[in-house]
Amino acid sequence: MANGLASPSSGSLASGAVNGSAVVGFDTATEDTAVCVTRGGEVLREALLGLGSDGGPRHSTALLAEVERAAEVAGGWDGVRAIAVGLGPGSFTGIRIGIATARGLGASTGLAVRGVGTLDALARALAAHSDADGRSRLAVLDARRGEAFAALYAATGERLWDPVVVSPEDLAERVVQLSHPPLAAGSGALRFRNELAARGVLVPDDADPVHRIAARHICALADRQGSEDGAGLAPIYLRAPDAARWRERDTSKRAE
Image (tube, rainbow, N blue to C red):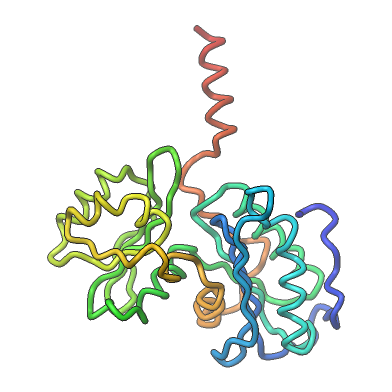
């Protein structure tokens, strides 16, 4: 996806041109491919694509086409003023695809590129949930390997815990230290529902859409930021990819 990125077909901007008013945002840190375009806080178009027919994420096959459709709804790229992308944590490959796409689009359109934490977007969705009721918000993604990516936010939206990768037991122990149990969402909240519920954490039903990343929140959070240089986007990995761990393991075995 990062190689040979096609130039936007809908009214590409030259660097320094006057930008429009819309924000195009997307996130590929999870299994979903989430894309949205907003203007003045209003959602103009939103897409949330799940796994493909092969059982894998559709980041590399569907992302750019969905982004183009979003830009078209805004009147072409000359109607867009910023591009927003989820920085993770999540899938190492998914995060790389998203950031590479954002950088390529920023370079070809001259638009500002802004990064947003994926857990921040997940927590923002919890703010409007019917069970929020002044509770703190716990954003939790399944990190595989029996671990979770998590961050805690106050009811007012302030981040209380920076993103961490933890075991479900350690996460449950962290929750015990809180004065009141939070409202939790995300694939990790679903996978570790029992451990969290045992500590009083409220986890909405499995089918509740709050558990999936909605790109409208990527757009909203990016809309609050100033201009950013796409080259400076920093992925939030929290740990090394599996390939790096396998190389370390093989090197260690050869040294024995």
